[in-house]
Length: 394
Picture 1 (cartoon, rainbow, N blue to C red):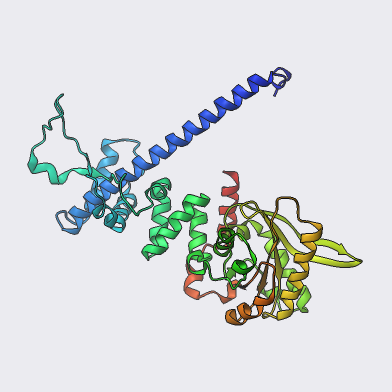
Picture 2 (picture 1 turned 90 degrees about the vertical axis):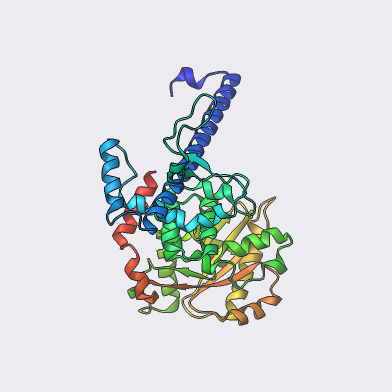
């Protein structure tokens, strides 16, 4: 930036910000509109292909022939290969239920020609062959905005990896809220299994957080079990418990992006082994985060073995110190999470009743404890590194 640009008057700076905001908002609306149009088109094509192939109107290899011919007649056309056409059919067949429940008519997309007065020149005999776009603007009790906000690739990844309707709706909402890449989304579904571990963390949030909305938000934010498959399990069990816990901590720190992804948005990593000196006694917090939505620091205390009541007492001391020495004006009380190998949930919730600070207890698994079937479908460590590097460049 040259000196002349740097020294422009404040009113011109304001003008730049105003124009910049307008440009970015316009670009966002354009992308959103294109995405909705694409989904509507793919849905309509999917319906058309489904109705003709499932009824066996067309012979074997029809989709491949259609794809090849489209490329011949529309050189440079992308996104209409054989696998894409199959995905469009899958997309329609998975979501045709929402169209049946819609009170709105379906728009027509065909090569029909209309006279100036709007009367169709196409005969009624061909009406069933039209490709009709999805139009659901007035559909009640369906999160249409969320549904149309995510890309076709994300929809297909959800359909491939989540089989139940509620689970699919959960991940559509997740995409709407957190904007993961398609690769990250697969990791959230297959590796972290976020849907099945949501809202199951043993905790005392409702009893200790005055704002019940924040309490419910915190309950949804943290899982009852975390997959730490990047830990080198060969390093564990060779040392005493304290060293093993440091191994787990270091592996999380080196993979902190993956760890934060399991929580959702708004998290910032403050540090590990954060030191506090209180009345001449040293305290070291394993992992310390801050969440903007909750306006709270979040402590993770790592334990190699099974849950012990003493862990809650240790966490309680961290709460006290953070409240007295670290909490800033406008911030809420810290949240503490014990992350250990195993825990009896009913027992944890029973013991936790007498603690007055927000806390929960989660467990973790390492790669050697995962089901063989799941391990086979997961990317290799090298592929994960490549995915991370590619996403970092975006």
